[in-house]
Amino acid sequence: MHNLAVLALTALVGGCAITTQLATRQAASNATSCIKEVRSSPEGKIAYVRLWNFDDSDNAAKLTDPKPLTKAEQDALVQTHNRLQRCKQIVLDYDNRYAAWETPYWQEFFQRSDAIFYKLASGELPVGLANKLLIESNGKFQADVSKGHADAVRVDEAQRQIASEMMIQAGTQIMASQPRPQITSTNCSWLGNTINCISSR
Image (cartoon, rainbow, N blue to C red):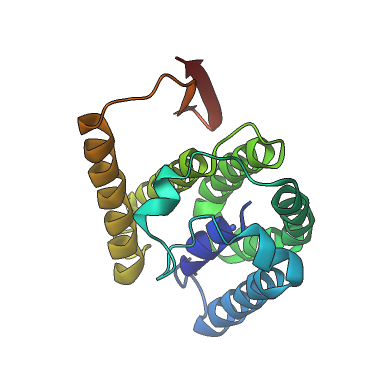
């Protein structure tokens, strides 16, 4: 069910079979359908165009996007975020019943997703920085659920995460080699599951 980590991320801000394959397939299907429904809504199509989706739509430009979401994108993000609560609950209900060991990791993941959401929805974060934070949060989730459960993250999801992290590194190296304009920049990092941002000139 870990493909939900990627889908939940792309929906923002959204286990392996523990008992029966049927329960796992049904829960994964329900959560995936819920998230796809939210993302394909008119608001979802507006909200996620510039955000990291962990799919073929992602590119380096999304990591260097210096502007916050527009007012229309912020409004759409708020609407989709509210609808996603049902999708998150599907994941938590499944884990509470069949995979309680991973519930704390999902809760932390959702807490980080919410932290990114609030800063995006308020216009406090540029989109590129938010996308980097999304990638970092997903990487932490994958590392957490893999502890003691080597098969907890599907191979294709791990490969997408590695490719995303490599894009961040490549972008950072390119940015470091270019002269910097005299503008205020914001740097953020994770402090537990909270975003700590500092602006500098």
